[in-house]
Length: 172
Image (cartoon, rainbow, N blue to C red; front, side, top):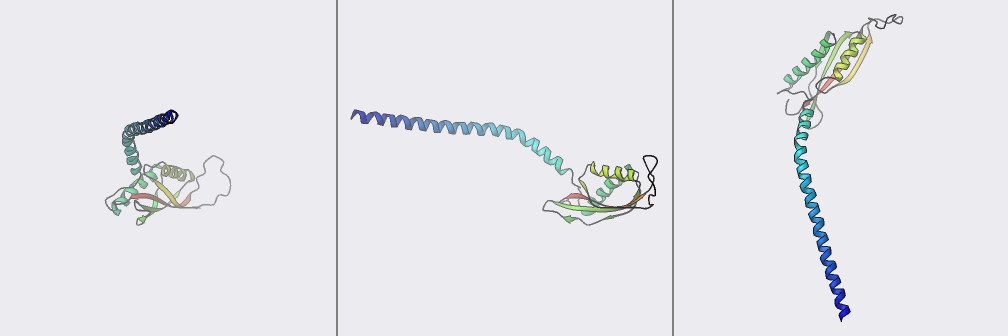
């Protein structure tokens, strides 16, 4: 009978040590959760700042007309910086992209030199708002008969370009 009691004591010890191990695991989980909670509280303001910065790339306006005016003034500034005179501009109605954003497009027609065109496209790339070129067509107005002797040739190109911008929903 004595040999039967020793295994029972061993089983009790094993059960007690197993319960203690489970409690230790639970305690470790709770400690990890508390550590994460502190880290998440620190990360939330940074995440909010990134969301605000990301929302800043969209065109804003109380209605479609004001949003179109903001986009037009942005494009006007880019063309003036590139020393381009726009002969015609057409703003289209916003098109739905998803539940959060619409797309506002503007088609421009102008004559420019290759360097002016390059300057304008570079300005679009670096614009403070998210602008994309949806369509692009360039036709030479004067055919080039020979290679330029200097680096720049003053031949002009007739350009038709459609530039699109994001318009935040609820804004138009």
